[in-house]
Structure formats: C-alpha cells, structure tokens
Length: 102
Image (tube, rainbow, N blue to C red; front, side, top):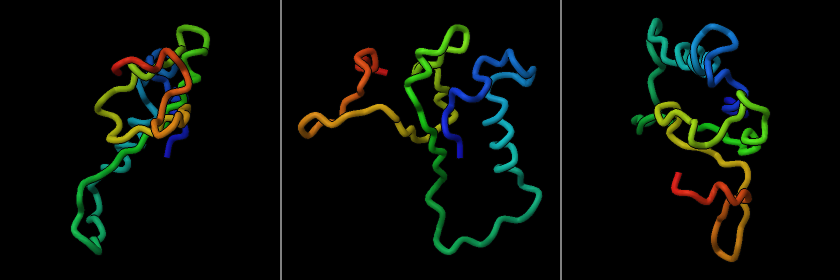
C-alpha cells in the first residue's frame, strides 16, 4: 500500500531509476511469477491497484509539485482522493482548481 503517489520520484531525476521507482519496484515484485500462485477460493474478477491522492502536492515547491494530471493512467485502477467535501447530496473537491474535467 502506498500512502501518497507524490512520495515517489515521479519525475525520475532523484534516484536514477526513472519515474516512479518505488511503485515500479513493488509492481515488479507483486507480478513476479517465479512461484505458482495459491489456488483461489473464488474465481478471480481482476485486480485493483488502488492509489491514494493527496492534492496538497500542488503546494510543494517546484520541481516536486505534483498534481492530479500527472498521475500515470496505467498505474492505478482506482484513486482515493483525500480532499473532498459533501455538499447536500454531492461529493465535491475542496480545492477550487480541482473542479476541472480531469
């Protein structure tokens, strides 16, 4: 489990392992097929890679600023969005700049 995508080297210039080295290393280990998988109790329905997005990364000093538009669409099947509020029966982002179509 990753607490926040912005904690990884998403630019790829800090640890010389390319973009997203932490998530890539964990993905490699989780998809390693060296040993047979355990028999499932029920038929598999696919996998979920759930990522947590904390929109406070937009306030980090450049070049480490991280915004939702920078999330690689191939990394996550679902995103847990930290900063939201309930207005009536609607769930709304707390940051006005998150109201776009992304």
